[in-house]
Length: 108
Image (tube, rainbow, N blue to C red; front, top):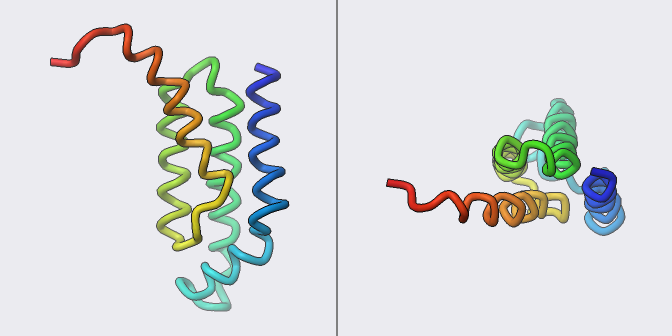
């Protein structure tokens, strides 16, 4: 679990350093909601923290955390913010869930 938390914090740290969401997110959400509505940034950061939590808790409940990360990525895309490094949480969770689901057999 410590390794998962480290990966989650690394995703967030690299996103902040490389993508600079502090300036990028308000610029893109302002076009969608108008300059007087800063809640777009709060929504983006909330979805980002949900994705980070999903990666941190992926060892205990991988399928619900995959759903959480997919919803987080959907919120990011709905806000029309370009894809950032923190959006890699979804493929990380997919990589975690896929081997566990392969053992269950075909879905019919």
